[in-house]
Picture (cartoon, one colour):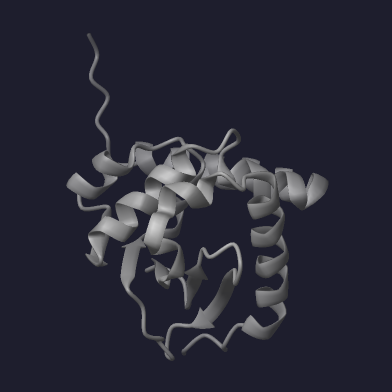
Length: 163
C-alpha cells in the first residue's frame, strides 16, 4: 500500500525559517558559492518520499520540501540515503568518502555541488547542529536519535575484526 503524501506545505515554512536563520548566522558562506548561489540544488534523500529544493541566494533564499512525484528543474542533484545525507551535514562523514563509496550520487553541475560543500564546510557549527539548536530541546533529541540510528546503520554489516 503506498504511503499517503506528506503535507509538504506545512514543512516548507519551517525549512525556510531555518534556512534564513542559518544564512543570517553565516553570511560569509555565500561568498564561497560565487555564481552558484543562483542555481537550484535538489537534495534527494532516496529513502524518503520527499526531496529538498534549495536556492542558496542570500537575496532570494529558497528552501522547500517537495513531493518526489513532482520533481522540479534543478542545476545540481545530490542523492543518497537520508542518514548518509544527515551525516554529511553533521560533519560526521567525509563527502568524498561517501561519494567514492557510492553512498552519495552527484549529477548535474558538479562544480556547483563542490562550491556548496565548501561553503557548508566553512560554517562554524555543522548545519545539522544549527538546525537542532534552532528547534530547541525536541530538535536536539531528534538529532541525537538520528545520530544513533546513523551510527548503527554504518556499523550494520561490518564484521568484527579482532586484532
